[in-house]
Image: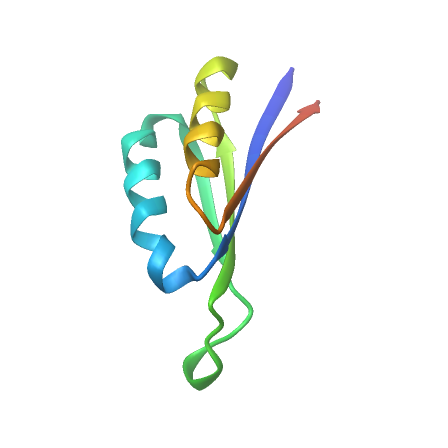
Length: 84
């Protein structure tokens, strides 16, 4: 069995988060689990963040999701496949 996860590093979070969210909504049926992390809070809120996605479905669709995310300036997405 293979497990695929996506790691998405977002720079300039205030500007890019809406664009990333639109893509994730479009591909939402592939997303089983989503976790968003950024190091700061309140007055020390940072402008970068990391999103972790557990994906389901076809590998080709996962690769297309990653490709679309990487078209955005300030977004770096990677697909990781693990054997279980």
